[in-house]
Length: 450
Image 1 (cartoon, helix red, strand yellow):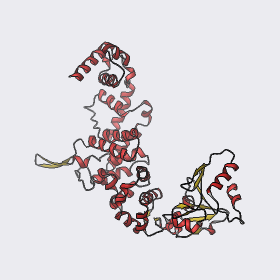
Image 2 (cartoon, one colour):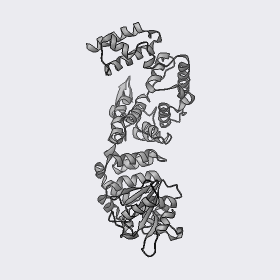
Image 3 (cartoon, one colour):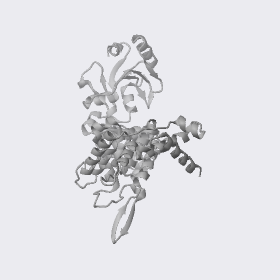
Image 4 (cartoon, rainbow, N blue to C red):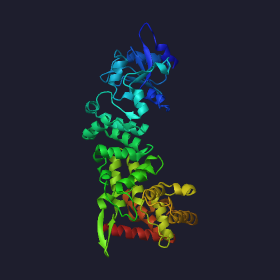
């Protein structure tokens, strides 16, 4: 900060101010992620040279397009005019270039709070916990559609509401969301899912017409009825309550939100023995596919999308103590990736936490964990202790054995054979001998050729 303070020169007109999101968070009494500083009446390149020399080798990132420097967690910028860097623009010009009132405040670096410069009542917006635009909301959104995701991201991050004018402007221009980058939408959805109460912001997305544009699969769940015997809410409300019921972990929140997303596509009303009821056969399979599609659309990595899709797929496990053999329990352990370290806190496994959220969201005043679930968790521990949960490397044959006996080259076929053999051994561990497994491999290849 001393280097910043030294920059102020009365004879040159150079002034230094705290600004932007840093000042906003300080006023809100929240810990800022970065320090944002605006320096008036000096060229950005001169600032770059000043800090490069003064800091002696510390990395200084220069962005002419954004009119800023970055040094660790400090962002230093020059004023903007009509959205473009302009050192001569002054504070009022810079404030007018901002989109939201609570980002258009300035505090001289050597002054106290009483010297706050607030051109557009940003402090008032913070007091009211509202996101307001400087220009007329409709003009601001049409001129800069990124304001849509920025406003919704801030509302989620800060637990604020949109000003009614801004809400209406976004609703009238919801189509513009389709032209925004994947990264913007991903950032917005991440903020919403990790917020204090995701359902509040997801409902706003629906009312704004945004949800139907970016996640029609979930929007389609609105009004989809369920059997009242088991569920108090429609599918959409049920998914939102489940999402709220998990800890603020992105994997869990997405898993809970999308666990029943396949129900809209599989809904059927049937009549059997004079009784009418609603079915959602295979909704977990359909939902798993939709989940992958949604998360890839948002720009999440394939591995992350697959993890969430697996939570959706496996949330419908139906453990029946009298019908599940130890082999069935071992298969569940393998498919869900349960490891020995997980046994200490088995109730915290993501698939079990999603199931817990699903149960809470039923609206039936059920206990969070059923007696059958507790029995299942204990059964997993016992099976894990009593029998070794096998991996491919535990097989009595190796990939080299398979390639040699069947004259195969390295490739996916060898991997598929080994996975098949692993399934055989999980079902009956006494079959784990080289002779038996090679015979099973021969059968597998014969069936594959047919």
